[in-house]
Image 1: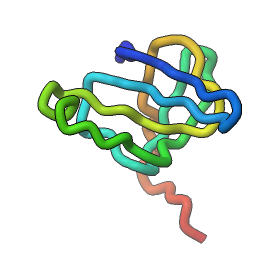
Image 2 (image 1 turned 120 degrees about the horizontal axis):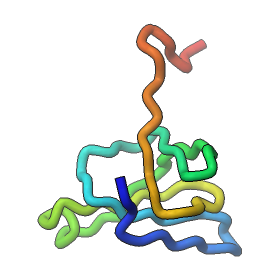
Image 3 (image 1 turned 120 degrees about the vertical axis):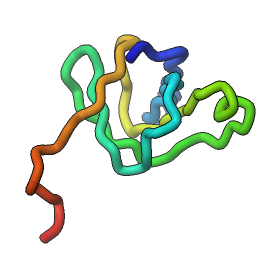
Image 4 (image 1 turned 135 degrees about the horizontal axis):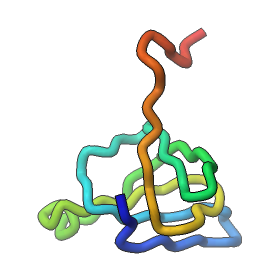
Length: 81
């Protein structure tokens, strides 16, 4: 999906990626155009955005490009010990 906006805050090393979806959850993994995988660690509350079907995702690191793809984990594989 195409990002509506990508903002990188260098001194905190976080990116805020705004997408036209509301079904992305904390802990979900996304990938940028360079193949870098990021885990969503937070969502920015935005009541007006939710009404328009927009979510802003927070990830650690610099998200590059403007294409956001969801990473599907293989079925049966979990991160639990």
